[in-house]
Image 1 (tube, helix red, strand yellow):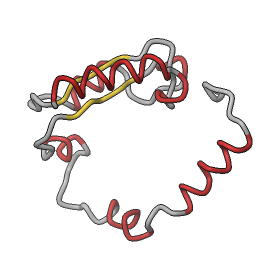
Image 2 (spheres, helix red, strand yellow):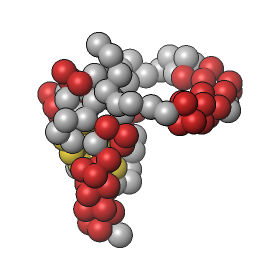
Image 3 (tube, rainbow, N blue to C red):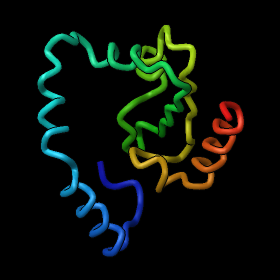
Image 4 (cartoon, rainbow, N blue to C red):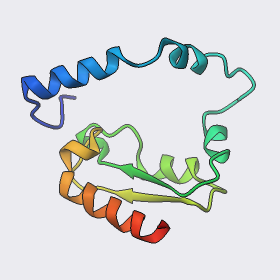
Length: 110
């Protein structure tokens, strides 16, 4: 499975730099959540409206619609939006649809 978008050297460098700034404390905290049996339990703790954008599995998306539905079970404030033709990097590979979905979501919650 390859990348789902063309990335300029400048954009790639900016992405690399952003990953370097990710806090080591935050990263290590992810492994200390031993009281949580499943990652989905974390989602159940979200009490604010949330938008889960998913792309196409065949384009490299990690989460498919079935997994998204399971993830948001019991969470009435989560909206799932499929961005057709997008892969894992929904914002980059399906930008126009991403913006449209984000604007719609924000107009509903604000």
